Figure 1 (cartoon, rainbow, N blue to C red):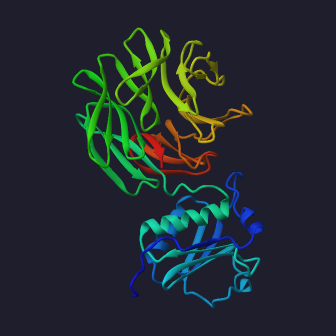
Figure 2 (cartoon, rainbow, N blue to C red):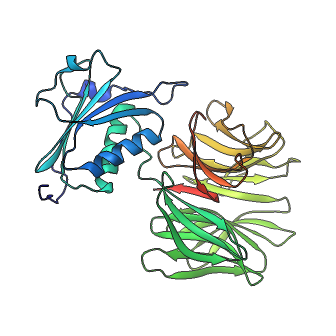
Figure 3 (tube, rainbow, N blue to C red):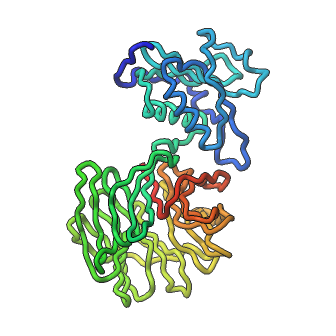
Length: 392
């Protein structure tokens, strides 16, 4: 095998703007069929090909054939027109990876790019993400991660996984009870009960340093992380419930103070979502610091655990209707859609790509984390655990 060359990505160009703007697979449409993709080449990059095939097929939007031997240097679309193949990907792997993507309706590539010849999973994820973006017009989920919890006999632990649940890392963090964990960059923020006191702590994955930020006899529950230096949380002493914002020194301010049960504060672009029973049952409300709140959910008598889409246009939440099910509310149109049906489905978290969420489901008799699409058509079990939080 030839010696691999290491270096930065070399060249990038899209040959034709009209091709770049075309969507070959509209994943926003219901009941779409899989896009069939044939792959030629990758002789010196078998790991890269494996990651491309695994990632694309795991989404259930693609069927990938190959790898086939690299044919003639010039692409001949007529060789594929009598097959069910719709897209052909050619990769020459000599001193670099030269990637070309073709639709079988034309001999002109819709995308060409050169990469350094690295036969590793990271390069495979990168190229798979490019292919996904070109063919769907959407950001890929392939660089997503999620943090989640697992329960042990006398403790709870925090774990991190890649987007497909295949590479799981044990952080080593153990507490009696952990009520929420959020991963931001290289920091894990979490709220936990230890020794009859509630804590909010932060763990640095790089330095392995763990630091206590707040400690209280009152219930502390992390709600959301605004950035690597601020977070929003609930403090409840049994009589008064307060939504607060704090920095890493524990210095903060109160946003809402109420005798109604307030929970699950979520932050997006200065907007705050939270759950309150002030209307007679748990419902989701929206507010901005210093302003009054407005009710967001009206269908169902028990709506909780909101998560906001990256563009701020949708809210996913858990609603109790003969068991807990995940619903998505379009904040612009007001349309609400149920996307799960089997078992109890809770704890939704929008992923950064905006098309997928992680949720907890017990549909197979135990608590498992699932990857689900916003239309509910894709529902993939990832690993055992609960309280997932999806991030980059």
